[in-house]
Every structure is written in C-alpha cells, then in structure tokens.
Length: 148
View 1 (cartoon, rainbow, N blue to C red):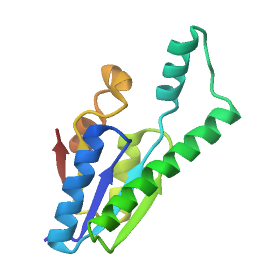
View 2 (cartoon, helix red, strand yellow):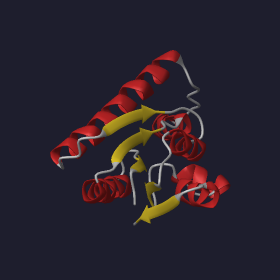
View 3 (cartoon, rainbow, N blue to C red):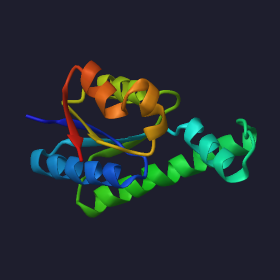
C-alpha cells in the first residue's frame, strides 16, 4: 500500500506529468502528497549569462527571485493537487542538490514512492552529474517512478 508520495517538480512539462501521475496515485490510495521543489542557481545564472553575454554571479536579488519563483512553483503544484481532490498535501522548498533534497524529504516523510519527471530544467547539470531522476532512483530506499 502507498501512504506517502514525494513528487519533485521544477516547472517543466516533464515535472507537470510527474505531478499528474503522483496525484493519480495519491487519489487512488488515499496517500499524502508531498510536493517538493529545489531551485537551482546555476540554471538561472546560465540563462542570464547566455542572454547578457557576460558573467552573472549569484547576488541577493537573484536569491530573492529564486525564492519567489520556487514559491510560485510549489503553490501551483498544490493548487493542481487540490483540483484533483487530494486532501493531504504539503509543500517543501529545498536548497542545494535537488536529488539529495528529494531523497532527504522522502526519508523524513517515510515515503513509499518518489515520482520525478525524466527530464526537467536541470539538463545542464545532468551532463556532468547525471540526471536527478537517475540519482534518486539509484539512492532511494523506496520505490521510484520516472515519468517521461
């Protein structure tokens, strides 16, 4: 039986499909749904550098923008879950490595299932470290579902 599900979202289409699947399972099993997002500074920095053509290092304004964007992402996830009539939801905004954060959250809530999208917005880091979904499935102590 599945009683606790952690889903990682980042605003990408793949994460949206992961959220849909996680909601479907949560509804089917009456499970608690834990919606998690870990903002990645390098994604924002890389995009800013590509647009401007010069180095854009982390700064307080960027941190505030990341926090605001993260809040919007998890609140949109919660709103979708409510639309799907999922009554037991929580949100979590992490920091640092998204895979590690998802794994730690899954342990903290005694998750039976972790759901992630196959490809999200962190593709740049995946070239070096491997995808988040791969790292999660490699190290999780519960079942994992990677949604295309």
